[in-house]
Length: 227
Ligand code: ADP
Ligand code: ADP
Image (cartoon, rainbow, N blue to C red; front, side, top):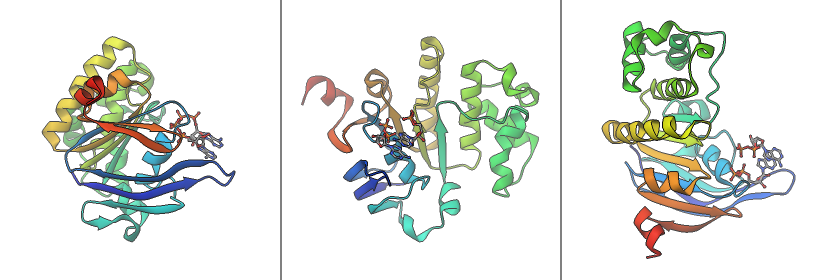
């Protein structure tokens, strides 16, 4: 996946809140980074600026060789996978339709075979394509969310509390599977979580956010030993 470089990135909301305060960060291509912090520390704002769901009020973001400002937002988002907590599947569409909606919007070849491949990638049976989201468990729905995010073959994945709504057993299974997917597909992953244990388990680099600043930046080993 691409390298991601943030330079003095800031967001001040219209109300006056400085949610992200001149954050500079260099994430190597292929790295798995967790962004940890209490509610309100600025994690979601930072993540959403990277795929331009939120416009920065200062600083810059570069993804790979391209300066993000040069790309229209829709062009940028097709190259970024985004997974969030409550998945947001369309309830009136089948699983297959939900997975292929990204392909349709992005004019990619759309076929049952491709949907089946994506479902298998996230360890769901092919037959799940014809089911409705309401008929699935929470863990299965989250898998569909991953399949949909991967449908455009992004190399950068942004995830906001992707495992937060799951029971511990389902969560542990999905966490391990995602870690393997990250390696296998050569992704760069930036995951937001308020759960330090999850961050230490999954990520190779842990960033701690507080009051709009990155206050710690270390490996899981370093976090645990204070080195
Ligand atoms: P986190 O993801 O760590 O919980 P957020 O990025 O959601 O933090 O929020 C950071 C700060 O910005 C908080 O003080 C929050 O209330 C504020 N904030 C977030 N979104 C908005 C918004 N749309 N308008 C105004 N303030 C916001
Ligand atoms: P989370 O941080 O888990 O996304 P929140 O309840 O903090 O959940 O925020 C939900 C939504 O409301 C987010 O899209 C966030 O940007 C927005 N938001 C958060 N704080 C504020 C705020 N003070 N004013 C306006 N919108 C906000």
